[in-house]
Image (cartoon, rainbow, N blue to C red; front, side):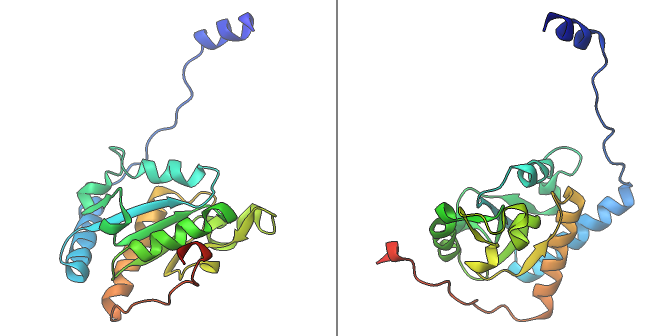
Length: 188
């Protein structure tokens, strides 16, 4: 153990260079997102992240959206703590039996218009955990999903592109209330 510790002290840290984005591309992306969110909602886009039973790989990429490299808030998007303040539910992980009712309640608590994004292979299809005794399956098995972003985990840029696609789709069609999930036995 001592040998490993001494060897690691003498080595340089293993880090990757951050992605290089041109200022023009970044400004164009920011303008597109800001225009779309203001056209659809009249304000910025509020996102509520819901972990339905993930391994936290997708959460690491979501957290990267808030770091100085991507800085999500400069695009007029922000993460909120309550579904009552959200426009988008960003759901990660396969839907576990323990989280099914909580996800349905979160979906009901989110005001209309609302969108649901299944983020990552597990949320889209159940992924590696499909068929497990502890999992219900994909997010779409409990609540209506408007957009899926595949990947294990998807990169932050792919998440941003997915949110842009969601906003563009919302401008093309009228916003209507989605189908209600089945009533939960605990709601009685």
